[in-house]
Length: 302
Ligand SMILES: *[C@@H]1O[C@H](CO)[C@@H](O)[C@H](O)[C@H]1NC(C)=O
Ligand SMILES: *[C@@H]1O[C@H](CO)[C@@H](O)[C@H](O)[C@H]1NC(C)=O
Ligand SMILES: *[C@@H]1O[C@H](CO)[C@@H](O)[C@H](O)[C@H]1NC(C)=O
Ligand SMILES: *[C@@H]1O[C@H](CO)[C@@H](O)[C@H](O)[C@H]1NC(C)=O
Image (cartoon, rainbow, N blue to C red; front, side, top):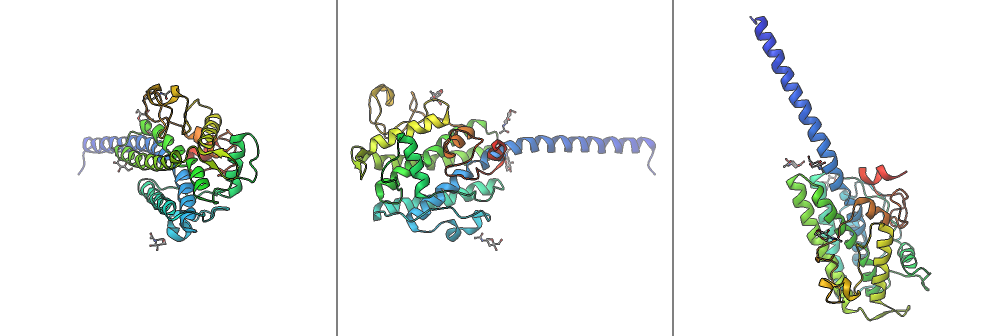
């Protein structure tokens, strides 16, 4: 038979258990939400990269290669197989399958969200280029036309993801999230370096039919991203004024870096301003006609 004392003790123990449990759930919940959102956000860009590179190299995308990873999201608009040489096609196909791996890696850690609607049509890229040059290019820029235009369009992509991962890293507390982000950052940076090196090799080549050099394209695209991001200079072309090169000593700029040649960082807001094309994280457009998905992007949509 239980004495009053025993019952009191039991109730006290239950209350303590309940309280501890509640506190830990709340703490874990609050932390998990933030950490989960930060890890989920880059899925927006990884979906874009996966579709652009898969289609560009192979002529089909996630719906054929890994339909489950789309989680039922709509197919991308206007994306096509690019006219690529065997060498460039091989590299782009490698990037493409790496992006599929990235989608899986992220979804192993967080629940994720379906593929958002992506506009990867030639005209979507042409709009970015027209904006970058401040005048319409004629004929309109076509990323799918040849090696060079595909590489120039690719210049637009992994670098933005890379700066996002640099920005996310210091916000994370959980060791497994940090490891994931470091791993993604390493491969995105490597992709960006390969793209830039291939373009740097052609820096003085004039892109047909525009008579504009590859270097000039890179500078204009980087300037546009700096303008749209509204957070200062975080983007640099392939050839820069001496003062902007590594240690202020060299104007070749095959890899972007700040004054200590370490990577620039961008917040999710800055990234959305850029990929929505209009410099406003609240107004979808550009590559994401309906906006990005996940808590961070959705909470910013007006
Ligand atoms: C990491 O921990 C700090 C200090 O407790 C907290 O302010 C921050 O919100 C946490 N970050 C995430 C992503 O949960
Ligand atoms: C994809 O999802 C279906 C249905 O949930 C499942 O049966 C199948 O095993 C999954 N395939 C892969 C490769 O995960
Ligand atoms: C990090 O998160 C994972 C998955 O949510 C969890 O299993 C792990 O225990 C967490 N690690 C730390 C150090 O909080
Ligand atoms: C350059 O990177 C270093 C190391 O991350 C950082 O301390 C510094 O603030 C950065 N400078 C700029 C202008 O981003």
